[in-house]
Amino acid sequence: MRYKILVTNDDGYEAKGLLSLIEALRELDDVDVTVVAPANEKSACGHSLTLVRPLRFVSVGDDFYKLDDGTPSDCVYLALHSLFDEQKPDLLVSGINRGSNMGEDITYSGTAAGAMEAVLHNVPAIAISQVMDFTNPGGDYSLACKTIKELVLKIKNGSFPLPHREFLNVNIPAEVEDAQIKVTYAGYRCYANDAHLHRNPRGEEHYWLGLHPLEFRARDVGYEWSDYEAIEAGFISITPIQLDMSAYKSIQKLQEWV
Image (cartoon, rainbow, N blue to C red):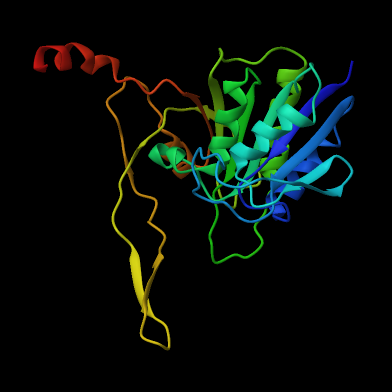
């Protein structure tokens, strides 16, 4: 029986990272790849579904669809409902994202959200992102493609290493031809405010949200490597992410406070 992979992303259906991922996965033996990606870039859309307007699949190639103004979560949700029969895909791969998804940035990430939506439906999932210099309009995805092929083969020929409602979040270091893998935890992301005020010719104000520098600090969690530390050291970072966001250590304290 052939191995079925569903692919999505948040950079849009024409993104170089997505096209590189599709090409890499279709080189694998006994693998069928179905792609459903947003028609437009949906970076930082989070785990959002579209509830206020209809959505439409548009075929752009063999087993390749764009979802008209849909989010990555929409793409996965509707693909599982409409493009697959009772047999769900064996794996969901979301990416290859242009830019990192580490620390609390995972909560913003449409790439991670595609994986979140898959594991909600009991489909194992990987989100993969390529750290890069945003002044480079193209970017090199060769190490990311090599890595995802190795991970998919390991899963295909064995089993997915995580329980239900957990997914693998993979980040690839920039400008590295080869690298070892470090299993990591999600780092503590340091945030600032980078909003740029502009005015149009009529004097009306508008804002562009800028880019934050990649600044992190370690967490005292008993594990050596955060995702950011691994990337800074030139390693591939693989982080297990769970959807259960309950702060269990605070339950007793909150009970006492109430």
